[in-house]
Image (cartoon, rainbow over all chains, first blue to last red; front, side, top):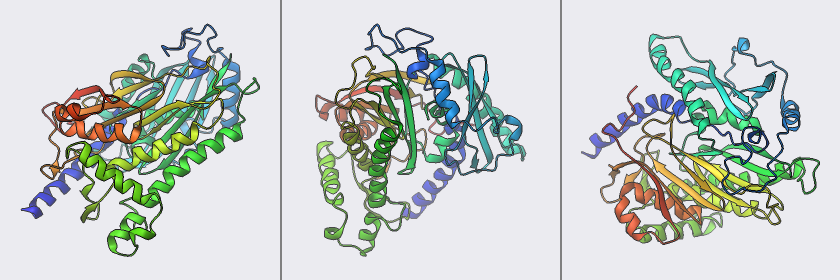
Length: 191
Length: 262
């Protein structure tokens, strides 16, 4: 009986692993109340307690200069989705500026389905777009999974940002799950 | 006053730790240097890494597994080993058995495994170090369990509050609740990311919770984490035993299906 139970749990684990791909893509949210940037959209940046009059300055200049510091040109444009599945050493890059908006590209992460890479666009302190620029398409099964997962990711990013949150709490994600998530790309905005 | 947020990220303890630090903007009075912030972050992450080396049930060379194999005496283990063991016992008692550290590990053997407690404990310890860093306001999030706080002389113009989105486990793209925390701990237990990994100590099988996730806030992450686990197993019994300083701040009911349907 114990043996059977063990087997069942093993099976459940496999199922969970299978589905965790989608789950981890969904379990993302936006860290948008970023100090300086958030001030552009609201004077009291969502941080209830901070009723101080001295809202942080918009400082698009300073924060973008910081970003440019860690920016490695636009070498990670979507076209370069060659995505050598770097085991996500966190060396993702921000890039691209179109009149006040910034894009951040997360590390490409190799998953059991293939490489996944997420890019977000931040404009005026808000996430205005999120897209998976690299995702697996090889087999029919992968397509089936991704055709659901990717749109969910896209809408989730924009929905989560409307809540204007700094951090996310939920069931513990694995490092792999984290890297696939928008949270990873959002952290880049402050790295 | 101008302030900015800096983020630091590290993979450890089987998850990813995100540290966000609010600090006066570079070049303004009171601003910490980049190197000082990076050093503080590394120090915090090093505490998590040490905990991983000592307590990981996945690393054959961890003190935990060497002790289990009989290759290391408990008395010769890392000095962190004994206090965590004592806390696990205490947590079992305090929760009336809703928390246990007797688990079946990844290698199939059953025995003492502090996984359910040690992440919160180590994160709290890392946060204690960050509270010594002058002028900063921080939030350390280790796989969804987080501590918020600030160092001495943090400028009151820098907001202390962090808005924490509680991922909706039934639809994790959504935020099911937003909680604000300024100084304290917040832990969520649930099934969304790794399936039914929380064991009901009373049956020895995965907890069949009425909840998909439950979030507990309180002064110390070790206990917020323990109580979140206990509350996931049995919300009412946990709530009845929980000290006044802790509270269930959010709960998401389970739906009929346990696994997400693709």
